[in-house]
Length: 284
Image (tube, rainbow, N blue to C red):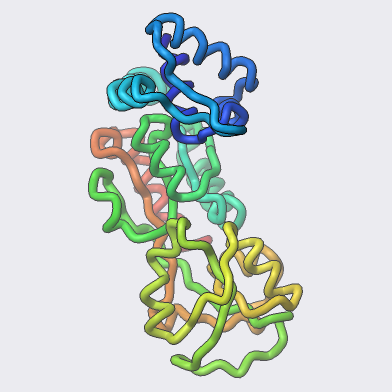
């Protein structure tokens, strides 16, 4: 029954059987069978099809609203009672971090704390935070302003410099405050809220946006325009320091945050992991 209810909650978030199955790592047919079982049990229609998408009926919506907090608590209890006892941390990491300097950081932490098993999940920061709240992840390393997540413990562990990549990596005559149009991350990203005001202050305007800093950087390298990206992304793609226009001395940084539910943050295993992460993050 629990997995059927979890499926309905996921379907309410994704809107399609295919995406719900992808997120739950089951087939589209399994999603359909689970929803059918719920509808049979409650003797109510819980979903309606609108073309390729699925929407909840009023009965389905009320059920999701009631069971979501319960499912979250059940996951949280499982993590505390079982996963922590096994010495395991289920960790959500922002995609841009795990694709750049993150693995080097976690390798150092693992070397210091070999008794801790790390299970990694890569997500965009807003999705990561949702899954942290729902009890799917124990802790997270993500980007963006900590002010938006008052229900979580949120500690800034690094300010990653933002850089401008000139179009085609050609020489760029840039002075602070000079009007400049750049490609950068889209508004739903966690990082956007933390850089938006600084962009206005430095007279940078967003020409267009993409869903990944790596694609933003690649577009600049190929000559499709100037780009605003984290320094770690640029370095991972092999861009030389001389080709970057650094903005950290102007206060343009991307905050990197360690986040956890308040009850999870106080656990000894999580505290050990957090202290080790703080120790090694500057080295990467």
